[in-house]
Length: 173
Image 1 (cartoon, one colour):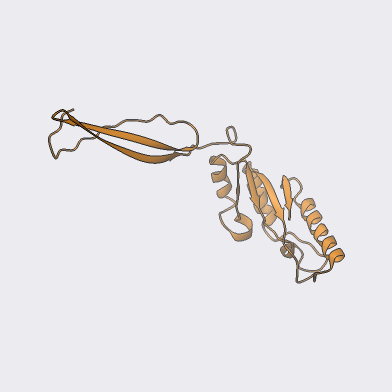
Image 2 (tube, rainbow, N blue to C red; image 1 turned 45 degrees about the vertical axis):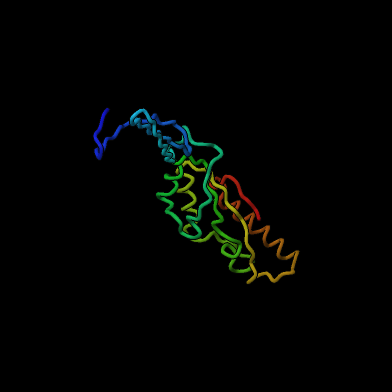
């Protein structure tokens, strides 16, 4: 198409969706010929593709490390569904440290609301990895290897038993 000096024109071109995640670069080459001389200008524009996924095409190895429960980063009613739409199959969180579970020596309890939130995450279709970690310096003065190690083992065992059927894997630090 011919255009006069100072005029603007636009050309629309639809790019076929590659159908997978990625960062792509669109290269546009503009060529102008004036009195037999050719001038060329190239523009590059990056863009990314993120497609909605569901349990039928989610990546079985992809997940998020998030702190919905421990620090309130997200909402157990909303965030897991967004993770699933992004293609996640896994959710990982250190939702309760040892000192949160055992606040009185020898007495372990799951913090209020934790089990319910984990169940909501599980019900969304995500597999759950729960990190068991931390110290309990208020109750166990170190070095007290036997007492401290045994108490940590008790904490891990208690949480694993309480969350059986909800949590798929535990990561013990």
